[in-house]
Length: 294
Length: 324
Ligand SMILES: Nc1ncnc2c1ncn2[C@@H]1O[C@H](COP(=O)(O)OP(=O)(O)OP(=O)(O)O)[C@@H](O)[C@H]1O
Ligand SMILES: [Mg+2]
Image: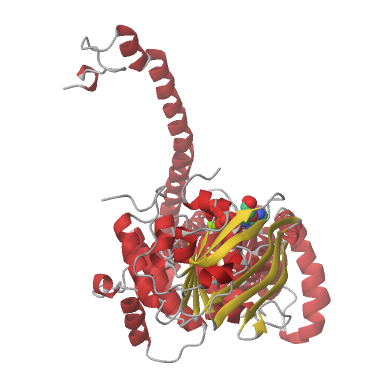
């Protein structure tokens, strides 16, 4: 079977795309810049003119992006262009980095996440995160899943929540007989699904995924991708990936980022995934997705 | 078949087998092997020194305790409640001294453990990098103050200037509380510093996982970082307890010399070490029962520390959340 993790020069767009490009859109799009695209409403998150700094070093410059609700949006771009940084801005994870600073705003239900007085803990509860490296707690599978719910004052039926979350993450059948087992005793792919289950148990609205499959083999990868398609029925998903086929397969919209002259990440092109892959408007996007970059 | 018999082909095979140069290069050089052996022996010897010393201490303790237990029955030692070796009627019930030691352990740890852990959590989870870089060495310097300095600071300042005016007649001039407070002041840096090391070693990914689920800093610290760092934290506590049990100057100067079967912090007490110190200062004749009681108490002290160690090892195995 082909190795789905390495970008191939030829990328075919996801054949069963849910987003169809309306006829006549080409004409409309002639007039806009490649990175000025507004996906259909409603938006789950709207990033406006966002700059991000690690100390004095600007890692993101003038990011404008609107993430549509209950869709999968992929962030692609070469290493170091600021994909993770942008993703971590979306749930204020970067607050934890000393000396970091954000300019601009991220609108969430009419509220700017970076307004004074917004509690980052609440933000992260509603906007969950799955990391590149599976990072289950060194606790039992059960305790891993229930952790987020517990810290958020969950008072309902814990067993039920654990089962539901594990089922949603397509892990239940593999672990149901031994929920007391340590989360670390699972395989990498299972650990990643446990981390997804753990995120789902908090019932977030948006799930951010930073290269969730990069540590997994092709089969586990496909499993997670399938899962993401299912989750997109209920959740808004924003995923960072280095895998072009993955972006093409799972996402509805794709944003291509690139570090500009000063090394600050910018959005080069944004639009429906099919269009980006079949018909990129910017030369740099085309070079990147066809593997001719650099 | 020996490994060296396996035909090795360094380059794409020419069909003639390995060249002699290649074979020579692949073989362990005899002098290299000898050096390796010598290094292993030296390291083993170094390890043996501490083992032998420990064994020697046990032999001496047990050896000198045997004649003591010929004079004083083990029954009296373990079941009498009076420790009165110096005047008639002589009595050797060790529990008064054990209680003295436990008294100090209890109260000093009751103070040092929460403050030490809180400091560790603050340093590792809350403090900015700069604050931590300034505070940590300061804290560690505090652990290097000689205990006799602590002892007189405790007697004059804590006991006489603070506790006595505060509590009046309900507290003895020499009391376990002041000793415990001073002991705690001495131990907080140890607990904080070692625990902080253990907590700082917990991978950032674990913390981020918890933050990403909407955990607060305190929840991350107590529910994720602390359990993952448990063995290091317990090690710090164990070290602290061992220091309390073994500490002599502070208790001898501040807590008094009154064997007392109590865990009340307000009374004057005597710990095992402070008894040994007292006997050592006096003119107990070598070979007398009083002199030999030193070794019996020493043995008891040794058994106690051993128990603490075993208990701590069990506790860590039972509750640690291993992250690697
Ligand atoms: N904690 C940090 N402190 C300082 N600079 C950082 C930090 N994290 C990332 N950077 C810098 O910010 C830039 C963007 O990093 P980021 O991790 O967002 O890239 P990325 O697009 O996710 O790359 P990759 O695909 O390799 O994961 C890089 O130049 C990186 O060196
Ligand atoms: Mg990244």
